[in-house]
Length: 122
Image 1 (tube, rainbow, N blue to C red):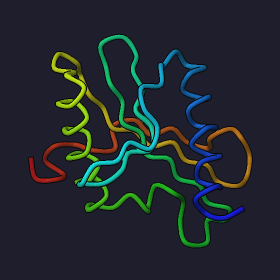
Image 2 (cartoon, one colour; image 1 turned 60 degrees about the vertical axis):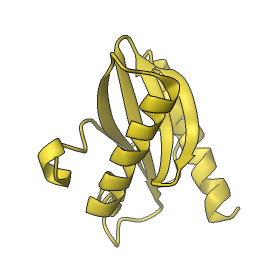
Image 3 (cartoon, rainbow, N blue to C red; image 1 turned 180 degrees about the vertical axis):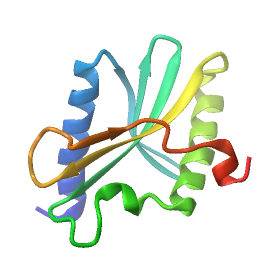
């Protein structure tokens, strides 16, 4: 299995995990000229933009350490494009990360609010 296929498998695991928590999947692998967002979920009046990371080993750090400043900015601008395109004007938004360490189907961490406005220059 190549990296793209492996990524898709863990994105599906993350989507199922979030669905089990009451979230609805709006989009998977949403692309714009700014970047890509793995999952876009909705629950009540909130839209959640989710980055999924999987590591078989933590020798180079857990998956959340791969979500750097540039990735966060790309996620933010891609999210803005999605919100405008789909006309989601009156929703709260949040950026989360779902981290898999190892090969299991259950995430090792679900990190809410990985982006704060002042952190990326807003």
